[in-house]
Image 1 (cartoon, rainbow over the protein chains, first blue to last red):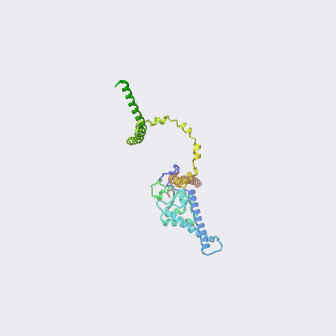
Image 2 (tube, rainbow over the protein chains, first blue to last red):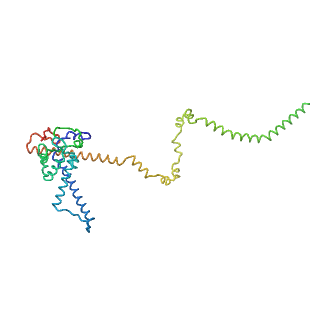
Image 3 (tube, chains in turn orange, purple):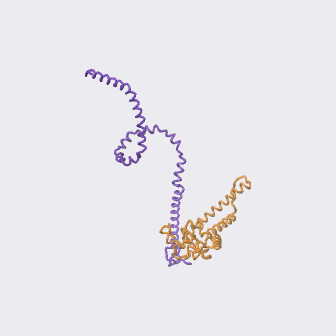
Length: 167
Length: 168
């Protein structure tokens, strides 16, 4: 599907995305989850102030391990939700990417959840997509997934798109 | 009857009629004038009622020619607009204008929110497209560098710039 696409972007739809696009998308996702985690901490502090009767409003930052657990859990939930639902998290949406199976199909919720856990456990696995001949990260290789350029969400909408046969 | 006597008789009769006519003429004239005053408007009204003046003028009068002959500039030049404006109570006029309703109507007509949404969507869409194209270029550059470092001869199909050899 190439309607409304800049000419330079038409031929790349459906082809494997490269490292930089994926890193940028991951960065945006990380920022989104960090904001959400920060918001959750602020909200819990305000809640405590109003309902536990503290004298002043103080931010109750969790311990380092608590923060890592909260962030990790949020990140897993967020990534699994985005990938399982549409194959696109906010970061992927901004960069025009979509997660698909190697055959170009929709990723199941189970695979999405497993991929999310693997990414949070070993984020450096993403860097392998820069070296891999098939542009796939360690997690992609383990779970049979791939990330493709999909600027207009054609994959999600089930629209026949420009098929380069590279999926 | 001798002729002078007859002449005298006729003259007396004429004098008598003339005096009578002079006596009644004034009242007769007043009555006839009143009669005409009452009759003429009624007659004109009745005639006008039966005539469709608008269509008559449309058929018989060349209004365009008449208008063309009027020097409107000259007419306008005789109008002292300043004096007219001075006599207008602008405050009273302004007080009668519901500016809020007019503004709301104009905004509704323009559909400003949609206008802002559309233009900002276009700007956002262009900015996102630029970001994505930049990222795709960077993807290709990174792939080329890595392939060169790893001494690969067949280039990868990052961003579709090489043969489609990226199947796993």
